[in-house]
Image 1: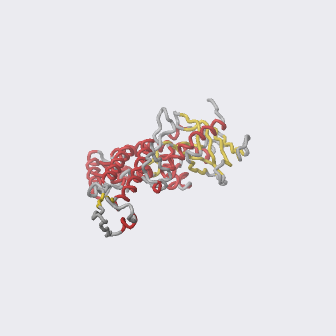
Image 2: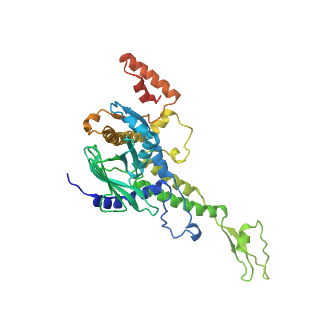
Image 3: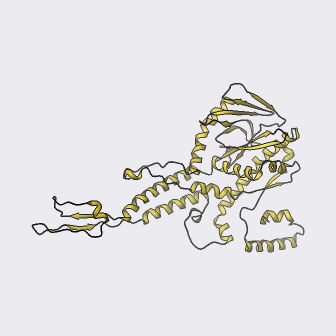
Length: 404
């Protein structure tokens, strides 16, 4: 198999990191609004309008993907992850993969010989992927950066070997020989396909475009609110020699005007008050588009649409989100299993065959936690199935359905 080398992977990471950083800016609500209107007053052009829709779209899925151990685990992978703070490791890996399309699990050996697993974001790691196993044939990661963001510690991953480079050196400063038959850098990928094996970000181009339109709508709403609060007035027929204070005319309740020597007097008027409804309707339209793109509802984005929904109604309105979560569980499970497999090789100092782990699967908690009424329905259904197929439901199967 062709070997690309560390320089190729450095260049590859440089081309991809900017896109990952852009998506993190949207997630952190730090992205700048592209202003396209010349009619906005200069005083409003410096205002920022953070909008958390992208963060909501990511968190709504990430919070439903809850790691619940391993099924059929003869190699003790659950113990390895427990020793590596599994709750934080899984949550941070899932969140990072949803934002950047792919994160990486870096495996190393501690001083006591036990494997250590660390999550590295897609902005700091890349590699060449094997589409059959979804593991890397070679990988590269930036393990440490200085205050200016320059890489000061890098790692180049190969089967049975990890090379470390300090301060952009051309020769490795340290080499770690190991027993794992794959590089100790494992991708955890969100929605991979044949064209994009490193997956797709949850923050799609459509999401970013809709958020830009929504921020501009918020800016227009802010400008419109000024005219809505203080309607514009006008005076016709005032003498050119008369003194007139615009600010006083805006804030005073009464103004005094006298007739001139010809008996004429100014005529006061007020423009029609601007309505805020078009801005609100436009914002709701954009929210509907974003909800459709991310499989959420308007209520998830802060628009109240009716009375609180039941468990069945929530599940029905989030059916597409449930299917997306199932897809994410399958693809993320492959990455976590691959990392556990290499960690077991490192722990036992033995190059296990990958097929020995084929029966091991990552277990997940239910995507939607059932309420009391749904638990009653599940109990009735389980009782009927148990009567037809005795001993079908054991404690593990009921736990998968109910989470209890």
